[in-house]
Amino acid sequence: MFKIIISELEYFKYFFIFIYGLILLLFLGTIKFEHIDLYFFMSNSSIIFYISVGIIASVSDKEKRERYQFLLPFSVKTMGKQRLLFVILYQATIFLLWLVLYLTGYFSDNSELIWTLISINMFNLIIIGLFVIYTDLGFYGIRFHKPILALIIAGAIFLYSATMLNIKIQVFSVINFGTKSFSAYMDFIKLPYGALFMTLFAGIIYYLSYIVYVNRKSYLK
Image (cartoon, rainbow, N blue to C red; front, side, top):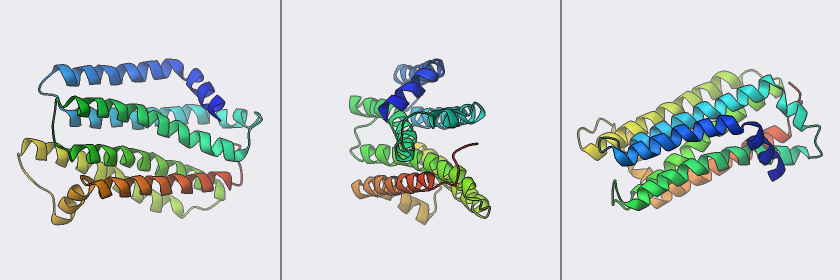
């Protein structure tokens, strides 16, 4: 399974060099400039993550890499696992940079922040997982899922954006514009069981994604 992941990294190596170069510049800028905070780095590195995953998926689809990979001696289950593990490991490298900034204590000594970092990390994985399910369901010959999942994904992206914005505003203590329900959500993800819930939910989404993939009617685009 890791052979497939390594081959993908090799195939997209110049793209990843560029992407990690951008993330590293953001990382160094976050440390150097006082007006740039941890949440700026989190939100922008997340945007790079989303865009880069989308580009990789688009290129792979255009070049029919999935069809090529099925010529290799790997089972459908192995293929299903590796495509999800690839995303998880990619996001994990970005999360590690968040963790480095947190552990330095340069931005905040708030003990609740670590749970927020974990929750946002899982939120990133959940959004990509929903996109993957959205794509794979298209191979089942059903159409009603598209508007439903599109609304869910749009809602998840909006919630993520609102989360990042509200966190940043709360850090600077400028204004709290959230509703009571949104404030409760913000309080929830700052707690250990909030981070645990987001982790379990991400696990469920990725398990569903795996099940949807291995039961697809076709793997040839």
